[in-house]
Image (cartoon, rainbow, N blue to C red):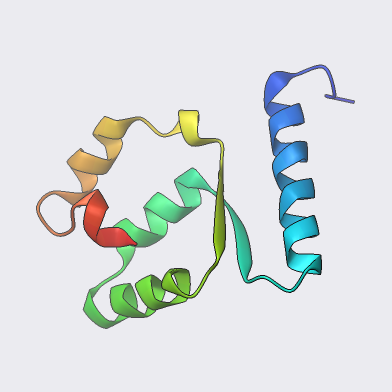
Length: 88
């Protein structure tokens, strides 16, 4: 169907990578970047710490569609609450 599109190939490769690493017993997660940014922005105090703890336990985190989230959207929505380096 969309196998000619670059984004489709990249997502397919990322999914295959996660599947193989997971099959070997590693803690992995595949998430779209916009979903991660939204979750971090919307998280409040304890919820943020819980989310951060979940990601800290991972041995591999694969972010899909990284180029679809402009850096300015993070800074505009997050403000001074959390800097990107504090998130994970």
